[in-house]
Amino acid sequence: MEPRLIEVTLLLEGGQRETLELASDSPELSRLLAVLGGRRSRTDSQEEFVQLPLRGGEESLSFSTAQLVAISTRPPVLVQFDQPDVAVASNAAQGAQASAPMTINRSPHMVIDDFLSPYEHRDMLSYALMQEDAFDAGTVSTGEIRSRKNLAILNFSEAAHSRLLCNRLLTWLPYIIKGLGIDFFPVQRVESQLTASNDGHYFRAHIDSDERTRLDRMLTCVYYISREPRPFTGGALRLYDSVVRDGVRQQGTSFQDIQPVSNRMVVFPSETFHELLRIRCPSGRFEDSRFAVTNWIWRNDPEHPPEAQGWGHMNCARIHLDWNAS
Image 1 (cartoon, helix red, strand yellow):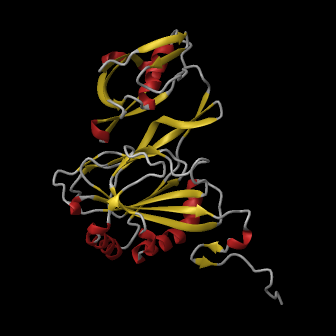
Image 2 (cartoon, rainbow, N blue to C red):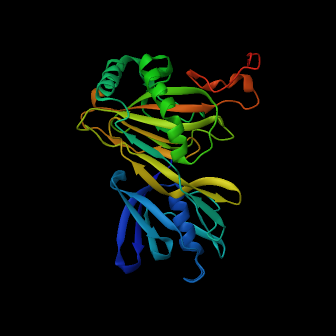
Image 3 (tube, helix red, strand yellow):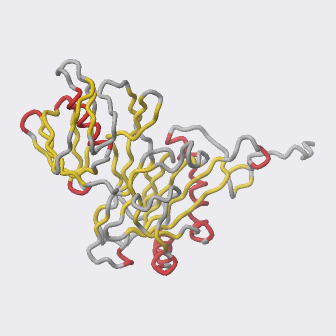
């Protein structure tokens, strides 16, 4: 069953009141109810920083959990108390513990505006507009049909326009890796997908690489192409911070929103929890869509060093053993 939307009203200290919509199974709703229900006193509650989306993601509400006074939900979300420190929401994720120790990790990312030249950017947009018949419904590896709604060209890697972006990314890669503060890695390949998102389209929070999917996807790189001024609203990229509790890495409640500015490249580790916020495109016309190229940079298998020949298209940085050093 698809999760319901819950109208949530938060009452904060000082009389501030904010209303927003959250899915019934969202970790934000579960955490808020657990924190409020598990608080025995003001002094022993664990204070956390929370960011929540307002008005379709155009604004955000930031506050400390110590400021939370009451929560109103419509339709009702029932909460039961199994232990003094635990609140379980029947319509939210089960078993969230307010007293569980955790570590919040801020998600690193890099934003590069004017990534291509004006001519290259216009050519990329013209290419996308001419490919309307080549787009199919976007899919996910798990087969879950409700997690994503947009259009995609899955084999975009075969196009010359994809190779232009891939080569430019690989040229920037040492600077990107240094900026993100991650270790250098040998590149195996760059995977590429062209997407078009129109009215009502979205992609719910997910990650592109973990132990259960594709651990060798290291970086996710999203390049935006659209008409200006933007004929749509929404469609921001939401990057969630991660929470490590009892050794398990989970999606956090705080986040950063990156706007889909045309000719902008956004790069972040593929293990980052991220989401495409719902798009509103009143015209519904294909040419008014939010177009984006998503590139995934794959790490080479360290157990097969003969396959690691430098940085992908630049066949360098590795000396063959049978070369004559003299």
